[in-house]
Length: 226
Ligand SMILES: C[S@@+](CC[C@H](N)C(=O)[O-])C[C@H]1O[C@@H](n2cnc3c(N)ncnc32)[C@H](O)[C@@H]1O
Image (cartoon, rainbow, N blue to C red; front, side, top):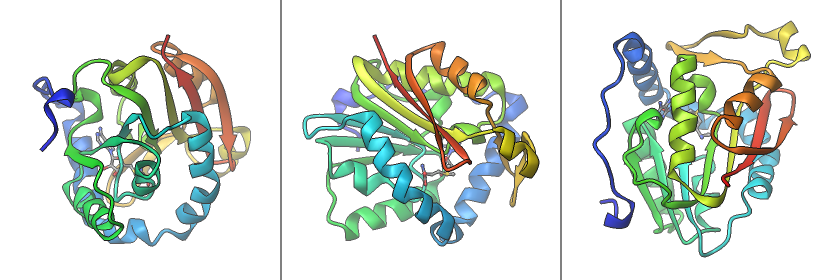
């Protein structure tokens, strides 16, 4: 149960045009929980990504952190060990169950797991000291919804707080290897951002302090809210 100081407004309805893509991803994420945890390259990438995320966030033991799109909890425990309280959101129920099990095994008790859509977050405005979202934005299936997700994450962040967000990059190198937009197995939509697209999107709602190119395949945005 989410504590009352973090609750809530009623989520709005999903738009008809993207509801099928979202449902398709929710079903695929539910079905692929075990496969996700076995992706060796993600675990390897995490050795760089997680410390960079920490540098961008500047988490401390007094902070309340919002993690948008926690999935099966690849990073959840690591964040939770550095903050007072954490809310980790995902729309895949099975991913949340897997994450809950990892937290239970790790003895982590300061995380609230919430099933919600990043584009319609059920939280009051400016309640979180820090906000993080890793490898989620690229899976939100339209420009309008990606903007809504960033707007929602920024809304939840307190003034003076930091936000770190990572997403697929469409660098010169990636243009040789991959499509700009497409679908992964099971119907998981993806979109690769150019540096300018990524920076412009963040800058609509936040002060962008830097965009870091991480291991060719991601950008990490380091932002704060004035
Ligand atoms: C690639 S996984 C990343 C998970 C985790 N952050 C990590 O880095 O391992 C993307 C996650 O975002 C979730 N997701 C995608 N779109 C979402 C949305 N609109 N609202 C909530 N969760 C979403 C998926 O269910 C999935 O668990």
